[in-house]
Image 1 (cartoon, helix red, strand yellow):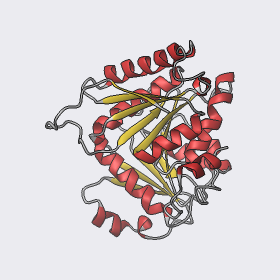
Image 2 (image 1 turned 120 degrees about the vertical axis):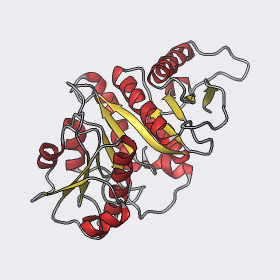
Image 3 (image 1 turned 180 degrees about the horizontal axis):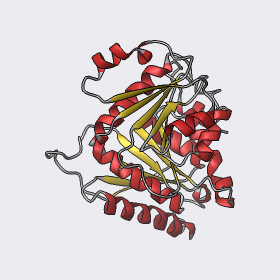
Image 4 (image 1 turned 30 degrees about the horizontal axis):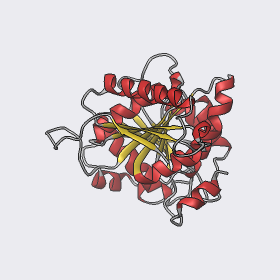
Length: 298
């Protein structure tokens, strides 16, 4: 069972404040610096969305308790320290943002997938350095990004400066054709919230309204949209055309939730991209019960 601690009192809606009915932005933390970097990004995004922030630490080492009357395990102090540090980072990033912390006695992927089902967005950090910590973190990022019912933003470790003035980038045509609309809408909304232009990278397989300039003008009037046609959907070509960017948006790939994995281009981008990446789930798939989510990542 999760241990949930609300660390900011609930407040009435105020101008520019959070929407009390908004679903949470979920961020996973493990005590690493790249996770704290993800917290900073998630806090800023939650503020832009008018949503509360939920900080989740999966602690499988707390799963074996000796009974209700037993002393708390010594590892609980470590878990509390991890979520406490993450909360402090969130408060420094966005002082008035409502946030809660959850310590969940379960493996990271199932815990984060359950949290995703109740939220609107999941944010994870990724080291992508080849170091030992990446060998632990990468499978969690891959499993959650491939199977989350909500979009997942993967925030890489800081390497160099940010991307001031650069557009949000949407890559169209690397998933099922029906998924391009969801990618386009996510990217357009992100560009609107951040006040940045939008760049579309169009691969040869783009189909539907997302590839129609007139339909873009109708759906997103006033949005500054730049269009670039790519001769292929190769990951290296996408990276060269897109980065650096404040956000790179693309489909999470083919397949339904139980059997979906990330293919080679997705994995390559997750390993090499230095910009935050949003993976938008496919639109056609059955709803799953919680136990099916756990089976999917086992």
